[in-house]
Image (cartoon, rainbow, N blue to C red; front, side):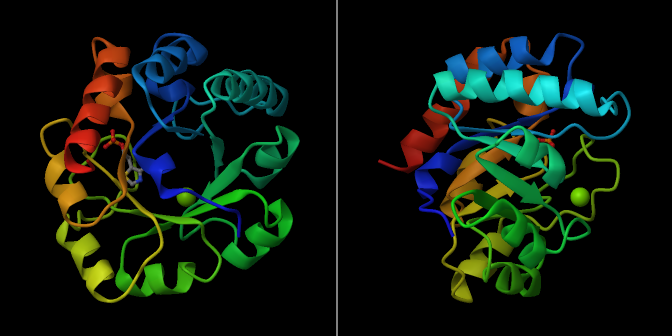
Length: 217
Ligand code: TZP
Ligand code: MG
């Protein structure tokens, strides 16, 4: 596993072409200016790019943008794209590539994130992941096939059971509900709409960072 610092998870912005009417790099640039600490390209669902060359071109542009802010660039699900763009890491869900296979393909120096909704999933992912994405915390409209929300209690349950891996919470997280999630033992929050649908993405990112800092000082 890579030397992954959990502080990277403070404010994890996730987005794809489908989440904005504007050019994605423009939105990501604003989020980076606002202080997001990690970015994931999640090019998925209705309105997303399917052409391989277009996906790679976008990934390379976003990777460079993130690098200029010293922010890790993570690719969701698509191992080929992560490799082709030399992304800093890969994030996979329970129905995606097998975790051990994914780790083997990206190598030990890259960041591997795995979605875990249950304690059993978290325990099994802990063998190969650098961090866990736990959720959905709350109801969300950003993921078509999102399962029933588990709430911040699930993070507490994982911590009580001895899961020590860095955890980012995901699903329906906003400025107004981030604090109890961090208090429950999450190392940070992952958001799509709280930043991508905000009137001012930079301000939204910076306000989320302020909540993180107010809990972690
Ligand atoms: N995985 C679980 S919930 C979710 C993903 C990708 C969507 C999160 O989006 P939002 O807009 O922050 O609820
Ligand atoms: Mg998936």
